[in-house]
Length: 122
Image 1 (tube, helix red, strand yellow):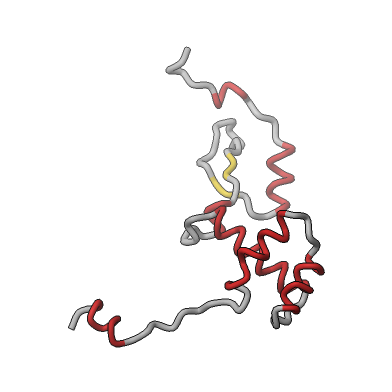
Image 2 (image 1 turned 45 degrees about the horizontal axis):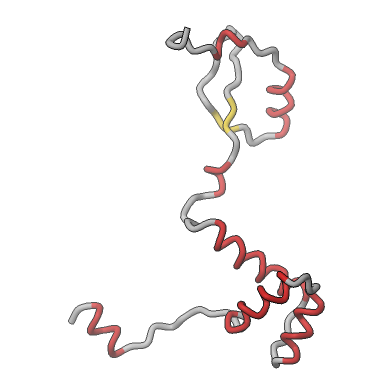
């Protein structure tokens, strides 16, 4: 038995929000400048009870899903990378700065622009 035969016999459980059937309506209401309270009232009229905070989170998740096709990228990979000069004046390897104190230190350092010049261009 292969996967296709198995899927014919079993219906996979789909994790689906109770708001999913209303997504097009929610998007239309928001595009026409309806408030979250108005959208919540629309959903209540259709038998769906949800808080404003829950509705806001659902909308943000759906919109982020459209903007970011790949969710496999870890958040740490999106952290800014900074080249900071070392004490000897040479640039250090590209590294991530995650500690706010390190950001303050890097901001206060003098930068020698010659360290960043491209000798192949000259």
